[in-house]
Image (cartoon, rainbow, N blue to C red; front, side, top):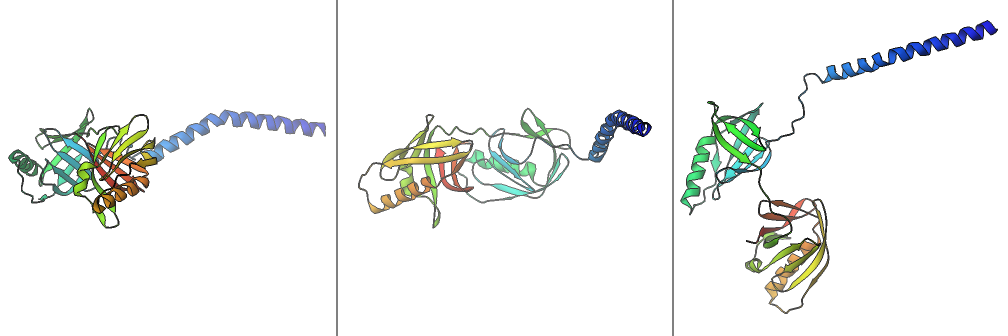
Length: 261
C-alpha cells in the first residue's frame, strides 16, 4: 500500500515538472500561431484621406468614401474616385454653375478641375499634410488639415432648423451667441438679450438657466426669438469646422453660426 502511494506521488511530481517545462513552448507556439494567422493582414492605417482639408494656395477639399469635392469659394466641383493602394483614379468631374464675381476664384477652380478631372494621382502623408503627385512624381496638390476656431468666441446666427425646415431670417444679422471660458454665454435674439450657463464635456454641450430681457417686439421678431430659444434648449452637442459652429441635437444640426469677425 505504501509503495503504491509513493509511486503515485512520484508520478504526479514528474508530470508537473514536465508540464512546467513544456509551458513556455506552449506559449511560444500560441504566439507563433497568432503571428501566422495575422500574416498578410494590413496594418491599421493611422492616417486617413477621408474628411475635410484646406487646399494649400486657397480653397477647401472634402474626401468621402468613393467621392470628393472642392471649391475655391464660388462653385463646388465634385466627382467619384477609385482607390488602389496609394493611388486615386478620379473620374470626370461635374460642377455647380454659379456666376463668380471674383475672377481669381473662377480661374483657380478651372485650374483645379483641369488638374483633377480623369487624373491618376498617387499620394503620401508628409508632416500632417496630404500630398498628391502625378505620373512624373511631381507634386501637384497639397492639402492641409483645417484650422478651426475655438468655441470661446462670438458667433453670428446663420440658420435654425424648425418644423418647416432649415430657415434663415433677415433678423438673424442681429442674433448670436458669445461663449466665455468660465462656462457662461451672452445671447442676442431678434428681440431681447440675455444669458445662460453651459456644460461642456468633449463635444457634448448643454445650456441651462437661460434668461432674457422682456422687451416688447413685433410679432415676427418674437417668433424668431422663440425659434432660437427653443432650439438652444434642445442642443446636446456641437462641432466646429473652420469658422462655422454647428449646434446639434441627436447628431443633427439645428443651429448654424459663423464666427464674428
